[in-house]
Image 1 (cartoon, rainbow over the protein chains, first blue to last red):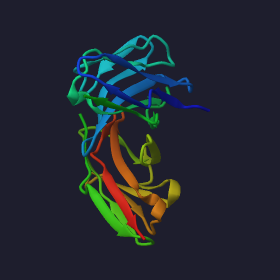
Image 2 (cartoon, rainbow over the protein chains, first blue to last red):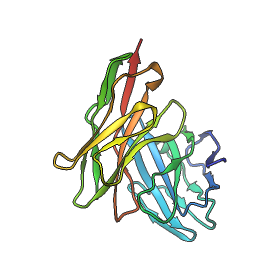
Image 3 (tube, rainbow over the protein chains, first blue to last red):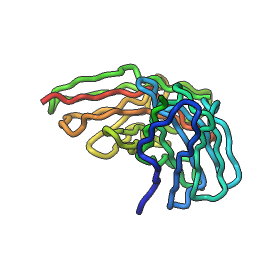
Image 4 (spheres, rainbow over the protein chains, first blue to last red):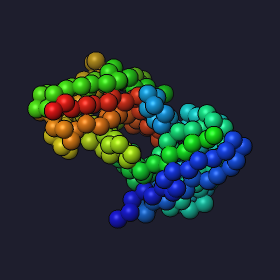
Length: 114
Length: 113
């Protein structure tokens, strides 16, 4: 049971480069989320999706884009990397149905922008 | 929207001593409450959750939390900690009618031998 899988685990980018952080879940969860975690700041929601074809902005969406073409995949795109986007990124998913279900997290992608 | 305040950023405690990690939340609607643990270089794992009913919730690894609606708190406790409990702990809240989770800034628990 793989759960939520994030790739890559580590990445270093130069300012202005672009990249896609991949997130896949095999639990048939409708809800998926992207967070960034900065030291002392907790987790901040970037984007989330309630199902294929539907995405919504979270607290800190600027500089990011997402798509949800399938239930399983929820990639996060950085178009023009900036040093402020250096962070640890977590993807999470949640089951459909009852709203009281917790999230399941991936192990994170550690991204440095230099 | 909801918000979460974790009052202590760092909590050192000796092995086998009790510990309490504090969490207060703000919301104008009914909420679900969660505690997650994060070990180094890993994602978050659910410790326990409060949905409704009994205000004392028991979770994994001997942790428990008590929901106090009047004080809008959801403090996490363990009567006797182990070295393996050293980790970052996050409190989270979600409105029972919403999709977004709001996390606190985390409490770093260090268990001292």
